[in-house]
Image (cartoon, rainbow, N blue to C red; front, side, top):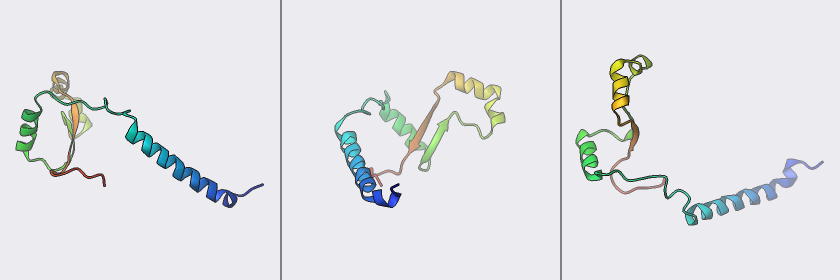
Length: 98
């Protein structure tokens, strides 16, 4: 019976090969191009968000601080009236991947 130590090199080479192949496929094949859409009125929406001066982070709307508030009539009305969503605000400036 072969031990795992006997296969360390093939395992390592396979992992590196799969990583490289998946990286190339992710960059070349446009699989996720249709995942995101732009909002109509983007400039107005960005101006409204900018004017609120929220810190970078992930926000949901409508927001309730606890489950009791989620069940309230006012919150149910907010959900029915919409919009319902999630937004991630990043620090301003250029994007970086790390």
